[in-house]
Image 1: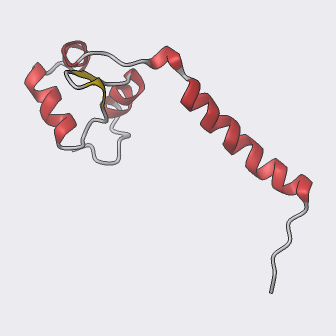
Image 2: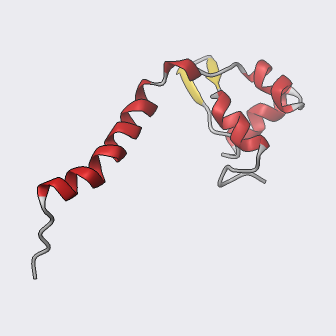
Amino acid sequence: MELVIPDEQLKRIVEPMVEQKVREMLDLSDEGVSADEAAKLLGVKKWRVYEMCREGKLPSYRPSSKTLRIRRRDIDAYKKGELENAA
């Protein structure tokens, strides 16, 4: 049994998903903040931010080997309890 989806219907399904992914990839307005700034926003010590990132509770990325950045949207999501691994 072969599933056949008309092109227009497929386009209506896939196009919004692709547009959303492209917007996320090109979102330069959320370049991220330092661990120091994240600590201030979360009301915790800087070492706790590093610990949360290491434990996977707070997503982060390293644009260079000595720099840790956390996106503001991830900080907001953590504060709201929306992150999957949040404790």
